[in-house]
Length: 267
Image 1 (tube, helix red, strand yellow):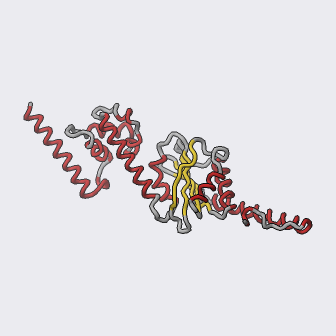
Image 2 (cartoon, one colour):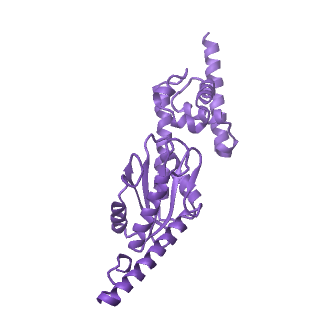
Image 3 (cartoon, one colour):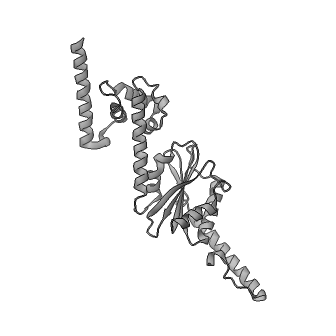
């Protein structure tokens, strides 16, 4: 019995060494999903074979992301996964979130909505409530700061345009990107999302700031207001109102002696 146990231990150790060597050579690109989970579970299981536990975990949670997003109590229902394994999995998830958060706040220029989605997906995809983030950028589209300003239902009554602009002025931002999640998984914007975006575009324009995009994150996909042409529509609506307001004030000033220097977007 002792010889058989020793043989099993050697086989497990050899298998783990091969997995580590495979990762060293090719990274995760050469791994099956169950092998990725198996490698994760190894950190919390010093000697026991974790292959079957990895396969059972993927069977239940479908994908590697599903495993990382799974609550610790659900992970521990899988035979072969204990508290240490579960904590190791959640630890890896939190490290990934911290890495992506630190990376996006480096002084690098934001190049696309896809890039923002990739940076923030893991931070928002499994949240049970809507989180409204604001990215503050300089004239080179470099991120000056990123903040979670609101939590809960994201709409015009919950999100304060004044607070958004106050924070933008504090950070000396030139432009803004808004990001929030839809816990339902469907990133299509509601009418409330559209109204909020319009209001924020108007508010930003009054202090000579630009809204570059509003990105809604769903399940493995996102909706970009800029990509759909809705940011441009909001800008056009503001300019139309601006021109209309200027014309009306000029008409009044011709009879009352007032000038148009008091318009908020001209201060």
